[in-house]
Image (cartoon, rainbow, N blue to C red; front, side, top):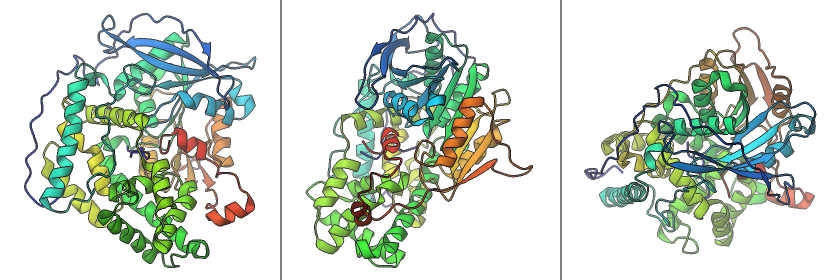
Amino acid sequence: MTPRAGMLIAAGALVAGTVAVLPAPATAASEPVPTTRPVAPLTWTDCPTRAYPKLQCATLRVPLNHDDPAGRSISLALTRVAHTAKTFQGPLLVNPGGPGGSGRGMAGYVAASLPPKVAAQYDVIGFDPRGVGKSEPALNCRPGHFDPVRPDSVPHGAEGERTNLERAQAFAKACGDKYADVLPYVDTVSTAHDMDAVRAALGAPRINYLGYSYGTYLGAVYARLHPDRVRRMALDSVVNPHGVWYEDNLAQDYAFDTRHKDFAAWVARNDATYRLGTDPTAVEAAWYRMRDELAEAPAGGKVGPGELEDTYLPGGYYNGYWPRLATAFAAYVNDRDSAPLVKAYEDYGAADAAAENGYSVYASVQCRDAAWPRDWSVWRKDNWETHAKAPFSTWNNAWYNAPCAFWPVEPLSPPDVHNDEVPPTLILQATDDAATPYEGGVALHRMMRGSSLVVEEGGGNHGVTLAGNDCMDAHLAAYLSSGKVPRGAAGAEADAVCETLPEPEPAKAAATRGAAPAAGTTLHGLLGHVR
């Protein structure tokens, strides 16, 4: 998927450039699990933060190529909040998604957010997946790739398409030039093998797991490889395994456009604050007029159309950002004041080194995991058709993924994640999630025998546990405490349903009340949607 805020072609005949193909590893994704080298126990050292004073850190060496355990090794950076209760239920590995999301911060957050009696029974383990963050080597294929102002994401004529295509090709080439020896091993299956190395280093026969977003797919792959090594598994905001990855991204485009319309409707309902009108359609039209104006004169020399989309995409992940995004929108439209918009871009859309690292791993994993069209005319046709119905972020997302059309490593075949052997899995999903649409949760529920689907009805946020919904949190806590999952009536799609959270208050109302930041802001920062 493209959880990436913080960075983040029709006319003219273009011929894709030729790229060198690096050798593939010896074993395909679907072949037997390789034997790993013996793993030394981890050495934990204190690395407290103000928010998480009990945090500990460790480093684990794992094979770059798990089919060659005696060959080159790489390092994974881990964090832990150790259990304190007499009852110990083992390690709880946590992952924030991406691919490319740093997971070190998740250990402290999850341990602090679960009910104390539940958290105390687990060693909560965070980790930076291979290529990410403090793990080494950390990838950064093309520093400055997202520097403003980028070409307009919606290509205007052959020249606009060519400019964006050349940029995507340059990123793919830079990755191949810098990391030729690493790219064949940056993929979901290799990361799942890394998770099993973490398990072995912890001395645990089985793991517990909580994964968000792409982390749900990582968890499903791990469970397919090692069903006997899974004790409990909770998957929040689920990737549709049937669409990995090209089709899933097209599905996102429709869902994010719908969520952007939800934002416009919310702004219209709060016209007393934002003064942009009471008609959602007119509010949305004003946003697109703002986009057109920024194409002619980028705000602060930084925010053109692509940067504007990057700034407002986080609102599709989490409506707690809507008040600030609406304030910036209103200031620009009503007062011709672009300063709030520039500041919102700097906070929500601009790419720092961490975001460049995350994007480099994102592309490396998604382009390697599965086949993408190599014929650019397929992308052109599909994205113009999608853009005609869902213009908010379709072309922005297309260019974000376009390096996969030119990726210098041959793709793997995604593993079949149907699973009849894993213990009961808890699947948690909002009905109106844009990043991982609802159908993904239903699909995985059907693919994992004995799983339970808990639904946030009417919820549009991505990441629905430990984000302020007490009902969803209660299901997660009960599962981690006892291993029991809810069971719905025969024939029901969902096993349990929770109401969604109230809409956020408009900015002025929240300020008048002295309100704290909306619940879930910390989680959504950790999930990588905003730094």
